[in-house]
Structure formats: structure tokens, C-alpha cells
Length: 141
Image (cartoon, rainbow, N blue to C red; front, side):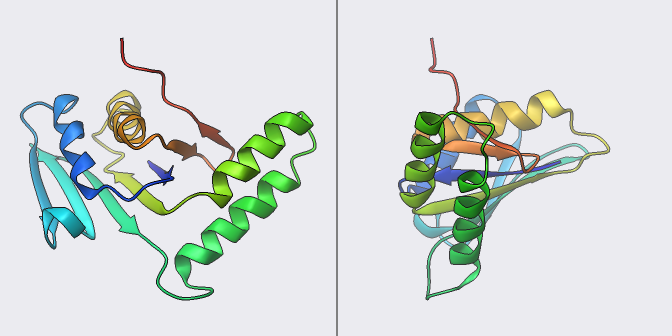
């Protein structure tokens, strides 16, 4: 399973919020908590990894993903003009991409999405799932 969180802010410490939906899972990260490049939650045989990606130079991996996403939503004529404009504006404001990868053989989709949506909620971000749509997390009750 894979998805990408598009965030208008860079807030590495927000990864701590995922602990609330993955109680008992151990968190390990590469780098410092304030600037990790990869954060992995591990429990028994399951792993859920979050990979950080930010702009470093013109046409870097971050820029290519944003450009591709922008082009994809610009071509989505099945969406209303207002929805398409809102999505394009959101993609253009993205400052941080967090790729989420789970061990699909033992990690349920429910756990995977719950963790990804929790981080997106903390970042006012959206989750790009299955290369089709940006999902906004529901507000917490």
C-alpha cells in the first residue's frame, strides 16, 4: 500500500500524532525529530514508513511530483471547474510531501489509511491515494 500526503506546511514533529492511532507501535526515524527523512512505525511483523520530501532545487523529485500532480488535476474535466481550481490551488501551495508505505501483506488498509489521514489532519494536508484523488481527512470529533 502506498499514498502521498500533500501538506501546505513542513512540520516534522506532527509525526507524533500518528502514535495516537497506532498505540504500542515503536517509532524510529532517520535524522532528528525536527528534520527526519524517514519515520517508521513498527509492531510485530508490520511496518508503516513515512518518507519526507521537500523542495531542494528546480526540477528535483519534489518539483516533478508537484508538476505532475498539477497537470493531472488540470486535465480532470470530470470535476467541476470550482473543484478543479481548488485542487490546483492546493497542489500549488504544497510545501511538503510525505510518502507513506505499508507492508501490504500484513497491514490492513484500515490501519494504513487511519495513520495517513491522522498525519494529514495535523498538517491541514490531503492524502493522494491510488493516483486518483486528494482526500481531505474528516475533522476530529
